[in-house]
Length: 87
Image (cartoon, rainbow, N blue to C red; front, side, top):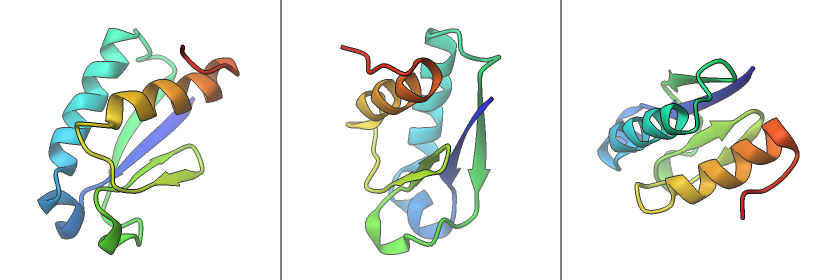
């Protein structure tokens, strides 16, 4: 099971983490990954000055927004789950 954590601390929340969470939820459903991916909120990933922060497995990504979350999800989640990047 792959865990994705999205920071919901005040700084990330103000920078759009709520919308990022909604987008990730849709991507999980779209790719039918409910049995393979768990999405959780985290109150601080200690990257407050770097924009919305997402942790996929043990890798941290900063500056995540609705503009780049789909690309990040497809690249990182597919790499972890299937050992390949989506093209």
